[in-house]
Image (cartoon, rainbow, N blue to C red; front, side, top):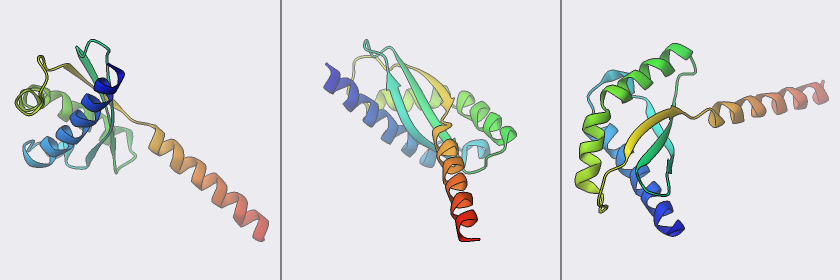
Amino acid sequence: MKYRIGRVEQEIQREVNDILLKRVRDPRVSGVTITGVDVTGDLQQATIYFSILSDTASSASKALAGLNKAKGLIRRELGQRLTIYKTPELFFKQDDSIRYGEHIDQLIRQLHEKEND
């Protein structure tokens, strides 16, 4: 069962990225990338993590609003593309891990600069 959930998560991630690229026309989601998916054990709910190129809070909230507005379309498309009995309920959440990683990289660069001074 664990294997199946992992496979469904990967499939959802791939398909939602494709749907955002080809089907969703909302400019608020133009720079959005799906970075991960968590599906509950019963496949009823999927939390979809996204990141955006801009790091401003307003861009993130606009992207989230755009994703939530497109949720019906995305879920309908997923239902046609996935080979599972019931399409999970979708929830979108911003993925902060990329921004956190960039912050760590910046701190390391600053340390190296101080060492070289």
